[in-house]
Image (cartoon, rainbow, N blue to C red; front, side, top):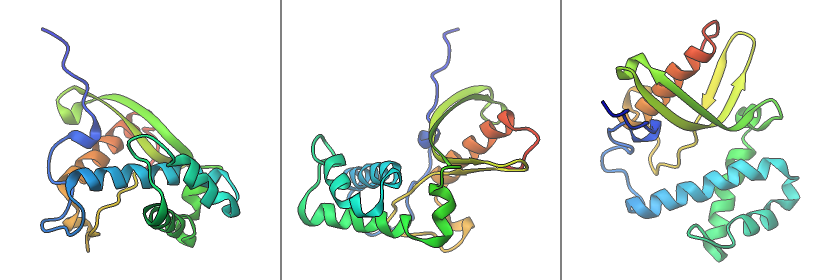
Length: 169
């Protein structure tokens, strides 16, 4: 039989947003997510005083280009995340950025996944995987989290559990 297609953890099905999620249409929301993700990936590498110029360069061209008020809004959102004290460990030198992960998962009946974890912190007793989301509405409880997001993080948790069987994921 032909080898089954490798699955992306972000495409395992289910809703990606809460019902009635206010905001942009799907294409615009996806674009905005990529723009903010790019800022969160690269801005931590530079002093905060350089972030406006760096953001302008990062989003200067291509399908995710932004300028003017749009760029200012994107930068403001990224700065809010980057300057939140509780989130500082995610942007420390100990946090790995854009970590590729590939695994064959029993939880998916032997299917193979390949994805990229936005931030990964590996400690002696646990592993923390973080994936940035830019949904317009934040779930009030873990139980209200959209299924697609839970499936994506579940796939990462299963893969990391195989890599780090002795640590809490």
